[in-house]
Length: 253
Image (cartoon, rainbow, N blue to C red):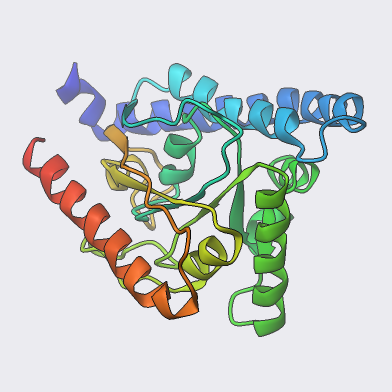
């Protein structure tokens, strides 16, 4: 079966199917997300329920995509309303779909281009995902303020501290923004290690690839009592934890 899925013709046909499924799911789900947002607005300032529903698009898509198999492992938080600054390594666009399988809502810090997409971008605005213009200092300041707002409403935020996906595999350097926010708000860092998504959508190819991907939830790193002087150490501790987990996960594949 694996060899059959790897053939060019079959992969092309299944990719057309998978993109079609994703489009249909967005067309169907986005109006539902809007309705849930309207109904829950009086008692859900964190837009938690609407956001959680939107992330289900990724879950249903993976179930209907025969090229992908995803799994969540590790120390998944038991309290969905305990806010974390969630950080992960970044291999591919598929990281977003994999991490969305976690059973709690997060507001995603995303580049502004995503918000321009029909349906997906509309839903991101509805649920409160955080827009970032790369290279724009004012946009960065505003985005960090948005992160603080959601954390104060007991909703986690999700940030890729590398800033962009790694072009070749090795873990890139981490920017400090996520760690500043965590210390300022007292929210713990929740590190995630992601493997296997790079094969799911190779850069420069519109077709999906066969992917056996895993997101591992690592132990939270508390930030209580830390100050801005601790940002570099927190950043490095987090990066080291993710790098060690990646090495272990890749060795076991």
